[in-house]
Image 1 (tube, one colour):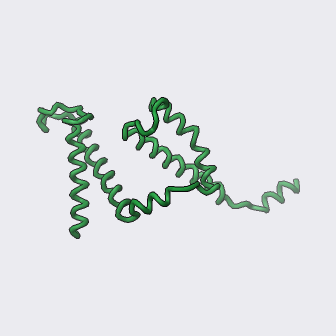
Image 2 (cartoon, one colour; image 1 turned 90 degrees about the vertical axis):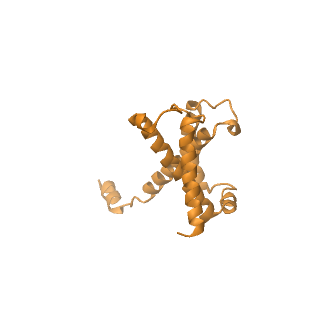
Length: 156
Protein backbone atom coordinates (compact mmCIF):
# COMPACT_ATOMS: atom_id res chain seq x y z
CA UNK A 1 0.00 0.00 0.00
CA UNK A 2 1.41 3.39 -1.01
CA UNK A 3 2.08 5.93 1.72
CA UNK A 4 -0.71 8.22 0.47
CA UNK A 5 -3.20 5.32 0.44
CA UNK A 6 -2.10 4.31 3.93
CA UNK A 7 -2.71 7.87 5.18
CA UNK A 8 -6.17 7.91 3.61
CA UNK A 9 -7.01 4.55 5.16
CA UNK A 10 -5.78 5.74 8.57
CA UNK A 11 -7.90 8.90 8.26
CA UNK A 12 -10.98 6.78 7.48
CA UNK A 13 -10.29 4.56 10.50
CA UNK A 14 -9.87 7.64 12.71
CA UNK A 15 -13.18 9.04 11.46
CA UNK A 16 -14.83 5.71 12.29
CA UNK A 17 -13.34 5.71 15.80
CA UNK A 18 -14.40 9.30 16.41
CA UNK A 19 -17.97 8.45 15.40
CA UNK A 20 -17.98 5.58 17.89
CA UNK A 21 -16.65 7.88 20.62
CA UNK A 22 -19.65 10.13 19.97
CA UNK A 23 -21.90 7.32 21.20
CA UNK A 24 -20.25 7.69 24.62
CA UNK A 25 -19.26 11.35 24.79
CA UNK A 26 -20.82 13.36 21.99
CA UNK A 27 -24.24 14.62 21.01
CA UNK A 28 -25.28 11.06 20.13
CA UNK A 29 -24.37 9.74 23.59
CA UNK A 30 -26.60 6.72 24.03
CA UNK A 31 -24.31 4.41 26.00
CA UNK A 32 -23.08 4.98 29.52
CA UNK A 33 -19.49 6.18 29.27
CA UNK A 34 -18.49 3.95 32.19
CA UNK A 35 -19.90 0.76 30.67
CA UNK A 36 -17.52 -2.07 29.90
CA UNK A 37 -17.66 -3.59 26.46
CA UNK A 38 -18.72 -7.01 27.80
CA UNK A 39 -21.69 -5.42 29.59
CA UNK A 40 -23.20 -3.95 26.41
CA UNK A 41 -26.36 -5.41 24.93
CA UNK A 42 -26.57 -6.79 21.41
CA UNK A 43 -28.37 -3.60 20.36
CA UNK A 44 -25.63 -1.39 21.79
CA UNK A 45 -22.93 -3.45 20.09
CA UNK A 46 -24.87 -3.17 16.83
CA UNK A 47 -24.95 0.64 17.24
CA UNK A 48 -21.18 0.72 17.67
CA UNK A 49 -20.45 -1.51 14.70
CA UNK A 50 -22.99 0.24 12.46
CA UNK A 51 -21.69 3.68 13.39
CA UNK A 52 -18.07 2.69 12.73
CA UNK A 53 -18.78 1.02 9.40
CA UNK A 54 -21.04 3.82 8.24
CA UNK A 55 -18.55 6.56 9.08
CA UNK A 56 -15.68 4.61 7.50
CA UNK A 57 -17.71 4.31 4.27
CA UNK A 58 -18.56 8.02 4.35
CA UNK A 59 -14.91 8.97 4.88
CA UNK A 60 -13.63 6.67 2.12
CA UNK A 61 -16.32 7.87 -0.27
CA UNK A 62 -15.35 11.48 0.42
CA UNK A 63 -11.69 10.63 -0.14
CA UNK A 64 -12.37 8.85 -3.42
CA UNK A 65 -14.49 11.73 -4.67
CA UNK A 66 -11.87 14.30 -3.71
CA UNK A 67 -8.98 12.22 -5.07
CA UNK A 68 -10.50 11.05 -8.35
CA UNK A 69 -12.80 13.92 -9.23
CA UNK A 70 -11.20 16.76 -7.36
CA UNK A 71 -13.24 19.25 -5.39
CA UNK A 72 -12.76 22.07 -7.90
CA UNK A 73 -13.86 19.94 -10.84
CA UNK A 74 -16.86 18.73 -8.85
CA UNK A 75 -17.92 22.29 -8.02
CA UNK A 76 -17.50 23.38 -11.65
CA UNK A 77 -19.67 20.54 -12.93
CA UNK A 78 -22.41 21.32 -10.43
CA UNK A 79 -22.93 24.87 -11.69
CA UNK A 80 -25.38 25.93 -14.34
CA UNK A 81 -28.73 24.58 -15.39
CA UNK A 82 -29.61 20.95 -15.94
CA UNK A 83 -30.28 19.75 -19.45
CA UNK A 84 -34.01 20.02 -20.27
CA UNK A 85 -34.27 16.23 -20.27
CA UNK A 86 -32.95 16.08 -16.69
CA UNK A 87 -34.93 19.15 -15.61
CA UNK A 88 -38.14 17.17 -16.17
CA UNK A 89 -36.85 14.31 -14.03
CA UNK A 90 -35.87 16.78 -11.31
CA UNK A 91 -39.26 18.49 -11.45
CA UNK A 92 -40.98 15.12 -11.03
CA UNK A 93 -39.10 14.65 -7.73
CA UNK A 94 -39.99 18.03 -6.19
CA UNK A 95 -43.31 17.07 -4.54
CA UNK A 96 -41.68 14.10 -2.81
CA UNK A 97 -38.78 16.27 -1.62
CA UNK A 98 -41.26 18.84 -0.33
CA UNK A 99 -43.00 16.13 1.68
CA UNK A 100 -39.62 15.07 3.09
CA UNK A 101 -38.85 18.62 4.22
CA UNK A 102 -42.22 18.70 6.01
CA UNK A 103 -41.53 15.31 7.64
CA UNK A 104 -38.13 16.56 8.85
CA UNK A 105 -39.89 19.60 10.39
CA UNK A 106 -37.52 22.02 8.68
CA UNK A 107 -40.02 24.09 6.68
CA UNK A 108 -39.47 27.22 8.79
CA UNK A 109 -35.67 27.03 8.75
CA UNK A 110 -33.23 28.14 6.06
CA UNK A 111 -31.31 25.13 4.80
CA UNK A 112 -28.05 26.67 6.05
CA UNK A 113 -29.26 26.25 9.63
CA UNK A 114 -30.32 22.62 9.28
CA UNK A 115 -28.31 19.98 11.15
CA UNK A 116 -25.81 18.19 8.91
CA UNK A 117 -27.71 14.89 9.04
CA UNK A 118 -30.88 16.54 7.71
CA UNK A 119 -29.01 18.21 4.84
CA UNK A 120 -27.46 14.84 4.03
CA UNK A 121 -30.89 13.19 4.20
CA UNK A 122 -32.28 15.73 1.71
CA UNK A 123 -29.24 15.42 -0.57
CA UNK A 124 -29.54 11.63 -0.53
CA UNK A 125 -33.27 11.84 -1.29
CA UNK A 126 -32.46 14.15 -4.23
CA UNK A 127 -29.87 11.70 -5.54
CA UNK A 128 -32.07 8.62 -5.14
CA UNK A 129 -35.15 10.39 -6.51
CA UNK A 130 -33.35 11.73 -9.57
CA UNK A 131 -31.70 8.38 -10.19
CA UNK A 132 -35.09 6.62 -9.98
CA UNK A 133 -36.73 9.20 -12.26
CA UNK A 134 -33.94 8.85 -14.82
CA UNK A 135 -34.09 5.05 -14.68
CA UNK A 136 -37.86 5.11 -15.11
CA UNK A 137 -37.55 7.51 -18.04
CA UNK A 138 -34.82 5.45 -19.71
CA UNK A 139 -36.72 2.18 -19.26
CA UNK A 140 -39.74 3.67 -20.98
CA UNK A 141 -37.58 5.01 -23.81
CA UNK A 142 -36.07 1.58 -24.41
CA UNK A 143 -39.38 -0.17 -24.98
CA UNK A 144 -39.27 -1.19 -28.64
CA UNK A 145 -42.16 0.00 -30.73
CA UNK A 146 -43.48 -2.95 -32.67
CA UNK A 147 -45.14 -1.62 -35.80
CA UNK A 148 -46.70 -5.01 -36.57
CA UNK A 149 -48.89 -4.73 -33.43
CA UNK A 150 -50.12 -1.32 -34.55
CA UNK A 151 -51.02 -2.58 -38.04
CA UNK A 152 -52.83 -5.57 -36.54
CA UNK A 153 -54.80 -3.33 -34.21
CA UNK A 154 -55.69 -0.91 -37.00
CA UNK A 155 -56.71 -3.74 -39.30
CA UNK A 156 -59.33 -4.70 -36.81
